Length: 92
Image (cartoon, rainbow, N blue to C red):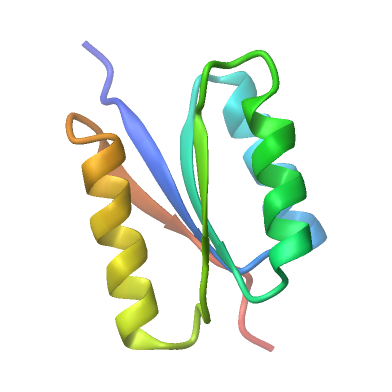
């Protein structure tokens, strides 16, 4: 049986958003954290369209340890039977 994955997205760039779209087509679930709330909400709505809630948005700072920890905890609450993977933009 394949492993069920959920994704904790810590920061949005065009590349991470594109990865989310691809992974959503494969059935992925997402906890999205972004400092840009409008961008985060837009992607969350897009991923949820027609999916019955595969994504949640959490405002916060992906660079802040406490905020990242909260995102991981929320992901575990939303998808307790799935293994979490972190998607984060590459550091410059």
